Length: 386
Ligand SMILES: *Cc1c(COP(=O)(O)O)cnc(C)c1O
Image (tube, rainbow, N blue to C red; front, side, top):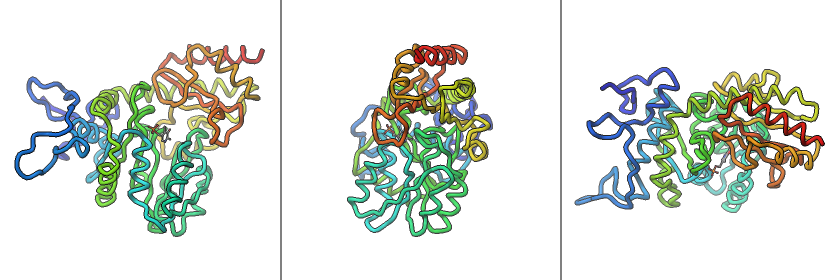
């Protein structure tokens, strides 16, 4: 049987993304073995004699991770040589692994000031370790203005929850010219929406908890990078912190990748349909979706993204109106997180932390039929007006 797996570097990566997604990371077929080997539950492996790898102890390596890591690498950087991926217990484990393994006391790092809501906590910890933290907004490539002398630039594009977009290629060139490393949080786009390494980043880092796995039932994170030394430090960080994924989660994640192209295609198409419907509503302000042709981010997004994601954000006039809207929805669960096959929405201001209006809604479009979802949202908007 032929296989489209390109992990040994001898076969060209298949051209189509759907094809690549369904076959990503699969080992060579072995008679009587499953296509995707089941999860390996092992704290330790048989290891007579000198302790050489790959599989020695369960905190360091696991064959189920290896398959998933290969798969993510094939999606993040198809056909690129020397790219490594490491999976983690969560997106935050992956983010922390990059920041805390690459930065030293006295270094400066540039973060977005409108990024993921745990970044302020990360900032406080970095500062406690004597690292200078500078922030600037994602939109308008404002991070360019604070790059001088930085050791690492952290980009989140599109940003969560505000959906601003930074020009990754432009920022990466400017950062590299100053000797800084560049990491991109690719959670919202997924590797089928955007490939940061091709745009010049050194690391693509993401939460696999969201659309990558897409069912709202596991936490996962990963780091993909091409710099061998930098990735060795990330690997070492995983070993010493032990923020590892369970084999069951890793296996479920790999299984979920087979439907990634289907989900991303469907969810981004429906997100655009919903955004267009919301644009017609007088009570909706601040509507953002990078796929909308008149969105402030659209020009840059269209240059660097292949799909624009499943998240739409907008603002309703008051907190009470937003709460009534969420309450009236039937096909959209009031829940945090995003990217799942079932639509979710929340009033983001309930958490504090994000600089958003009280009526700000982040809505994650699932895999429902577009007509049903739009009808539900429109009905809930009508009902919440009363
Ligand atoms: C959710 C999220 C994270 C954190 O991921 P966890 O898996 O929850 O740790 C990081 N960045 C972005 C953009 C996110 O949406």
